[in-house]
Length: 211
Ligand SMILES: [Zn+2]
Ligand SMILES: [Zn+2]
Image 1 (cartoon, rainbow, N blue to C red):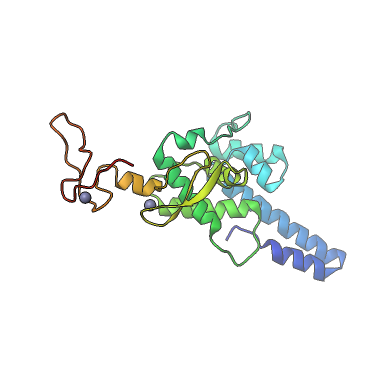
Image 2 (image 1 turned 60 degrees about the vertical axis):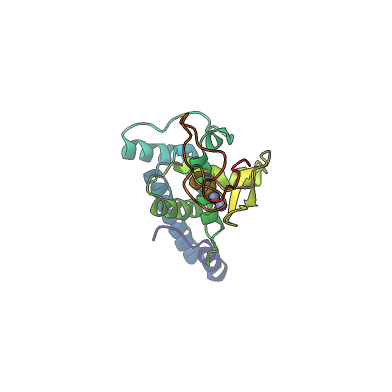
């Protein structure tokens, strides 16, 4: 297990008192933090993100990044807006998956690095083709905290999903994809007109498909 138990380390430090115990705890924390940094790089994190999350020396992280990837970590600021996610509804769907993983209750107090490792490893297990790299995944809770995105409840499946504060949709990305060519009332596959377009109303239940 890579992730450190921050609460336990703090408790030990508190109880220990002696310089020897304190030094032991410090060493334990340093090793744990280093392991977290290594795992973040293995999962594709850039040096900047690893440094922000672990607080380790930039030089050390950069050296490890180069050793692991065979090239230096990309320089410059990471892009910060939700434009990239909104370009493709599947990316918004994956952002909602990431958000659900962030919201999972955990028993122990975790470091920020550990939280992202847990979430991203969970995401890789859940999806067949990951669309969000670890940097994009780490932006998801930030976009919520900045009130760029808010949680909404889907009118169809009642699942909580993330949507832009500016948007007015009431259907989650999963349902939008599922019902793209199916009737929203009865689920029947929509028929194509002689012009090659999908019909505006369902053949089975006659329900109009306009929003
Ligand atoms: Zn839905
Ligand atoms: Zn129908």
